[in-house]
Amino acid sequence: MTHANSDVDPVGDMQYRKTNRVVHKYHDRVIMLVTQNCPVYCRHCTRKFHTTEKQQSYFAEGEGSSYDADFEYIAAHPEIRDVLLTGGDPLTYNDRRIEQILARLRDIPHVEIIRIGSRYPVLLPQRITDDFCAMLERYHPVWFSTHFNHPSEITAEAAAACDRLLRAGVPVQNQTVLLKGINDDVETMRALLCRLLEIRVKPYYLYHCDNVSGVSHFMTDIERGNAIMEALTGHISGYAIPRYIVTTKLGKIPLEKSYVTQKDGKIILRSHTGQTMTINALDDVALQAEVLPQHD
Ligand SMILES: *Cc1c(COP(=O)(O)O)cnc(C)c1O
Ligand code: SF4
Image (tube, rainbow, N blue to C red; front, side, top):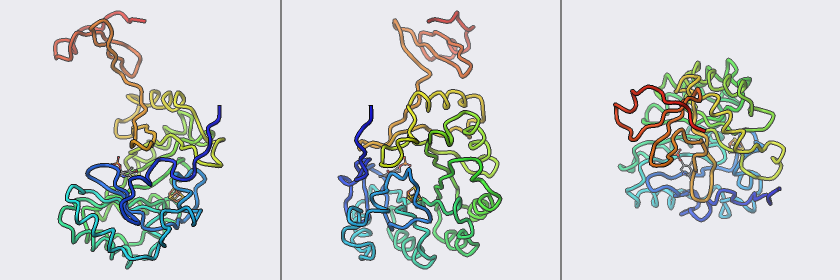
């Protein structure tokens, strides 16, 4: 069965949009959609209505409008301790403009961390200049989210761009979209995740592909995503394991299958090798106990 594509607000962010740029969906953190522009227009982009359809974008009032209302909203909400700059890709702006945004956020005392979401380290790594990294260093703590989908995207240049950020004290983490025929097999995903650790980038989220137009041939089912997660969890470094999630209007929902079930008042724990252990309670004695015969 196919579902109707929903390019306009597929993850229900519009209802959480408080100002031109600020989406406040989770209590303690917001995203700021600073631009519609990207270094590439990814086919699987969840916000493609925003980055490609000017009339339907978040910026009905225009991308160039003043930021005053956006900063005022964040300043008036002391629960906001984490601001994620996204878009589009914030690094389409020059350093001076990005610095103006960071400086105004740093004027708000309750903003603890600032994150930047950008594909530039992957797609145009030359953009991550030493000057840019030195500028970020003045606004710490700044974190960086990038978006590698395949091990072949981890070029020497991309690795060097991540290294420049890391040396400036900017932790870099990665978000991947699960794409059929691209990275939806165990070997490709293992190579991607392990290569990311080698360049000191932490795999953070594996997104189930959203149902936007033009991606039906890239969509996988949750069983396949989970089979990949299960084939890797416990089999490669824990650092390499992202959370497998789907974005919904209610927020990000983890999709990983649980390793714990309850049956007849007992707790059944399943390990990464498929062995199970049935216990009464999660106490030390039970956890050290001999493995009991497997149940169906
Ligand atoms: C993903 C997202 C965030 C950040 O969520 P984390 O799980 O903390 O990375 C914040 N706001 C919105 C609207 C988001 O989509
Ligand atoms: S770079 Fe990010 S925001 Fe831009 S099109 Fe790709 S996924 Fe979407």
